[in-house]
Amino acid sequence: EVQLQASGGGLVQPGGSVRLSCAVSGFSIDDYTVAWFRQAPGKEREGVSYIHSGDDGTYYQYSVKGRFTISSDNAKNTVYLQMNDLKPEDTAVYYCAAAETYYITTAQPLYKHWGQGTMVTVSS
Image (cartoon, rainbow, N blue to C red):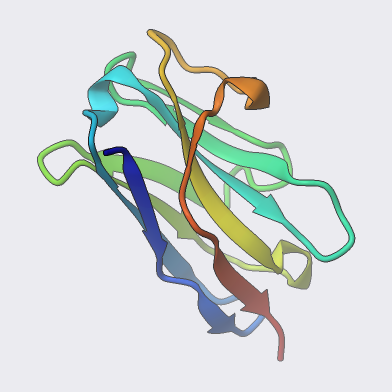
Protein backbone atom coordinates (compact mmCIF):
# COMPACT_ATOMS: atom_id res chain seq x y z
CA GLU A 1 0.00 0.00 0.00
CA VAL A 2 1.37 3.40 -1.00
CA GLN A 3 1.47 5.90 1.83
CA LEU A 4 2.98 9.34 2.26
CA GLN A 5 3.09 10.72 5.78
CA ALA A 6 3.82 14.43 6.11
CA SER A 7 4.90 15.96 9.38
CA GLY A 8 6.74 18.90 10.86
CA GLY A 9 4.40 21.85 10.46
CA GLY A 10 3.55 24.37 13.13
CA LEU A 11 3.59 28.02 14.09
CA VAL A 12 6.75 29.94 13.29
CA GLN A 13 7.66 33.61 13.39
CA PRO A 14 8.56 35.54 10.23
CA GLY A 15 12.19 34.93 9.40
CA GLY A 16 12.13 31.59 11.18
CA SER A 17 12.70 28.06 9.93
CA VAL A 18 10.90 24.76 9.91
CA ARG A 19 11.62 21.36 8.37
CA LEU A 20 8.89 19.21 6.90
CA SER A 21 9.29 15.45 6.47
CA CYS A 22 7.50 13.12 4.09
CA ALA A 23 7.92 9.46 5.01
CA VAL A 24 7.11 7.22 2.07
CA SER A 25 6.10 3.55 2.12
CA GLY A 26 4.98 1.22 -0.64
CA PHE A 27 7.48 2.35 -3.26
CA SER A 28 11.06 3.54 -3.57
CA ILE A 29 11.53 7.28 -3.92
CA ASP A 30 14.32 6.49 -6.41
CA ASP A 31 11.66 5.76 -9.01
CA TYR A 32 9.36 8.72 -8.38
CA THR A 33 9.31 12.48 -8.38
CA VAL A 34 8.35 13.52 -4.86
CA ALA A 35 7.11 17.05 -4.42
CA TRP A 36 5.78 19.49 -1.89
CA PHE A 37 2.65 21.41 -2.75
CA ARG A 38 0.86 23.99 -0.66
CA GLN A 39 -2.58 25.49 -0.48
CA ALA A 40 -3.26 28.76 1.27
CA PRO A 41 -6.80 29.72 2.35
CA GLY A 42 -8.83 30.82 -0.65
CA LYS A 43 -6.06 29.98 -3.11
CA GLU A 44 -5.34 27.16 -5.53
CA ARG A 45 -2.87 24.46 -4.68
CA GLU A 46 0.59 25.19 -6.05
CA GLY A 47 3.79 23.25 -6.43
CA VAL A 48 6.62 24.43 -4.21
CA SER A 49 9.54 22.08 -4.66
CA TYR A 50 10.31 18.84 -6.46
CA ILE A 51 12.97 16.13 -6.26
CA HIS A 52 13.79 13.02 -8.23
CA SER A 53 16.64 11.29 -6.44
CA GLY A 54 17.08 8.73 -9.22
CA ASP A 55 17.42 11.54 -11.77
CA ASP A 56 19.41 13.65 -9.28
CA GLY A 57 17.21 16.62 -10.00
CA THR A 58 15.49 19.33 -7.97
CA TYR A 59 13.20 22.21 -8.92
CA TYR A 60 11.85 25.16 -6.98
CA GLN A 61 9.01 27.57 -7.48
CA TYR A 62 10.47 31.05 -8.00
CA SER A 63 9.01 32.45 -4.77
CA VAL A 64 10.86 29.95 -2.57
CA LYS A 65 14.13 29.68 -4.46
CA GLY A 66 17.04 30.42 -2.16
CA ARG A 67 14.90 29.99 0.95
CA PHE A 68 13.67 26.40 0.70
CA THR A 69 15.77 23.27 0.18
CA ILE A 70 14.36 19.89 -0.78
CA SER A 71 16.38 16.77 -0.04
CA SER A 72 15.96 13.05 0.29
CA ASP A 73 17.28 10.24 2.45
CA ASN A 74 16.94 7.16 0.29
CA ALA A 75 17.86 4.82 3.15
CA LYS A 76 14.89 6.16 5.09
CA ASN A 77 12.73 6.60 1.98
CA THR A 78 11.97 10.10 3.22
CA VAL A 79 11.90 13.52 1.57
CA TYR A 80 12.49 16.72 3.50
CA LEU A 81 11.69 20.36 2.91
CA GLN A 82 13.86 22.78 4.86
CA MET A 83 12.16 26.15 4.89
CA ASN A 84 14.18 29.18 5.97
CA ASP A 85 13.45 32.90 6.11
CA LEU A 86 9.75 32.17 6.26
CA LYS A 87 7.29 34.87 5.31
CA PRO A 88 3.60 35.27 6.22
CA GLU A 89 2.74 34.45 2.60
CA ASP A 90 4.24 30.98 3.12
CA THR A 91 1.34 30.20 5.45
CA ALA A 92 -0.49 27.22 3.97
CA VAL A 93 -1.27 23.56 4.31
CA TYR A 94 1.70 21.70 2.85
CA TYR A 95 1.22 18.36 1.12
CA CYS A 96 3.75 15.86 -0.16
CA ALA A 97 2.89 13.92 -3.28
CA ALA A 98 4.53 11.47 -5.66
CA ALA A 99 4.51 10.92 -9.41
CA GLU A 100 5.83 7.73 -10.98
CA THR A 101 8.18 9.17 -13.58
CA TYR A 102 11.70 8.48 -14.81
CA TYR A 103 12.52 12.18 -14.67
CA ILE A 104 11.55 15.15 -12.56
CA THR A 105 8.15 16.58 -13.39
CA THR A 106 6.08 19.55 -12.24
CA ALA A 107 2.90 18.36 -13.98
CA GLN A 108 0.37 18.18 -11.15
CA PRO A 109 -2.00 15.70 -12.91
CA LEU A 110 0.80 13.11 -12.80
CA TYR A 111 0.83 13.16 -9.01
CA LYS A 112 -1.41 10.22 -8.11
CA HIS A 113 -0.26 9.66 -4.55
CA TRP A 114 -0.83 12.26 -1.86
CA GLY A 115 -0.18 12.49 1.84
CA GLN A 116 -2.29 14.32 4.36
CA GLY A 117 -1.42 17.97 4.80
CA THR A 118 0.58 19.62 7.52
CA MET A 119 -0.17 23.20 8.45
CA VAL A 120 2.55 25.84 8.48
CA THR A 121 1.57 29.19 9.95
CA VAL A 122 3.99 32.09 9.74
CA SER A 123 2.93 34.81 12.11
CA SER A 124 4.28 37.03 14.85
